[in-house]
Length: 118
Image 1 (cartoon, rainbow, N blue to C red):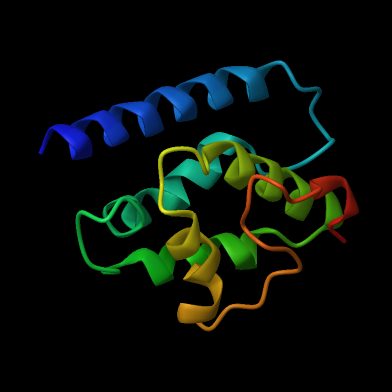
Image 2 (cartoon, rainbow, N blue to C red):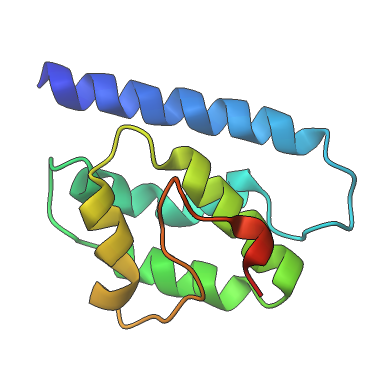
C-alpha cells in the first residue's frame, strides 16, 4: 500500500509540475498541454503502477490519440508522456497503445526524442 501511495504522490507531483511548466509556454505552439494529457491518462495510473486492471484506460488512450491531430500536438503529448513515465512500469506504459488498438508514431519511453515525432 505504501508503494502505491508513493507512486501516486510522485505521479501527482510530476503532473502538477508539468501543468505549471506548460502554463508558461507560449500559446499556439501546441493545443494539448500536460494537464489535458494527465486527464486522459488518469484511468491508466492503477494499471501502469501495478495496482489495478486496465479498466477504462483505453478510452483515455483513444481520446488522447484523437485529440492529438497536429504534429505540435503529438510532440507535446509525447513530451508529457515522457516526463510522466517516471514511477510507472515502463513496459506496461509502452504496451498501452497496442493493447488499446491505437497506433501512435512513437514509443512511450523516457528515451524517445519527441522532436522527431510527426
